[in-house]
Length: 302
Image (cartoon, rainbow, N blue to C red; front, side, top):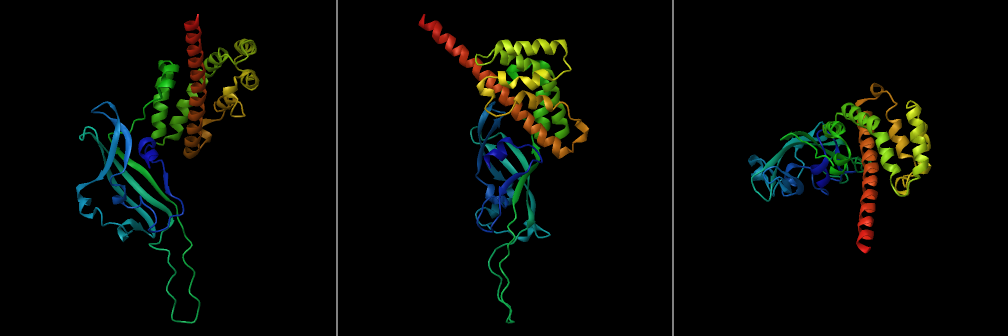
């Protein structure tokens, strides 16, 4: 639940329950969410604070007594309702954000899974319902608008232009705009991949001379993908842990036609590119920091 409130943007479904059993789970009806906490940015204090969920005043009479799935939460047999969650900063007590939430099931939901009563005839009683639907939640509105905070490790690595694309990309992803997010991340990969390789070359566990040869050949003919195909064996061990070539994987994302993908496919691909891109840059930063720390230690011992 914390993951959903802290990191999910609009229209991105979060699984609340797998194979829901009536009466056995929380987070199904609005009052279940009251008092839950998560970390979020308080604009008044300009810091991340603990936020607590409350509901609109109209729900207060139901606090502590609304336990069951009444008909108002069921549409055509499925769980399907929306409500507003007011999330207030526990530190300043004043700043709050509002999320319009949609809770729904992927199949018909029963209020209980008890065996149905035996009919008057001699026929055997029917078996208990087997349907155990999954239940999801998504944000369908937010006030103020959701904006994702960029990863400082990434922004410190990129220049101004790439950071502009990165910021637009992660916020497009947060709004579930897959094609837009994918377009921004592909621009970053196209522009930054050689820069990333040059950074990798300087890491102590890299094959510096061999990577430089690949860079020289690439400068002679930038359209040839030789450098991406052949660099894996020369990478530091920290970038080989995936068992596959992360540089080639990133490069391959720039070759597929953007408009050949559906929105859902673009969304999934954009999410994966972002994770892989951040992983590579994080590893570069970690090894750079380790080198600096060791140099400082050596200097202090002289």
